[in-house]
Length: 126
Image (cartoon, rainbow, N blue to C red; front, side, top):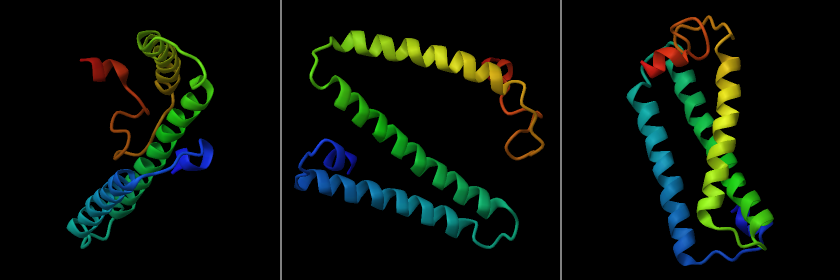
């Protein structure tokens, strides 16, 4: 949908069919998760709903990234390996800084942070 708005693209029947299947699949999974645990009265329902919402927001940002890349680099020819290499370098630099910062943020929620901090990279590597 963002390509229609920002890039002035036309969606054809196969694009619309794919969108219906994707949205339908997300809806089925979300409803199934809510129905499976619908009888509980604790914070699990809230956390599941928050998780689904976070996934939808993440997909929005992922789509926005592709639209921005295509808008800025659509007029230039760059070798695909060059583009992928630079994306990898920037991703590595971003996560090196990001993971270092979140190592030292304390967290009291046992559900989200069982080891007392937001991220424990050393534990994840082991």
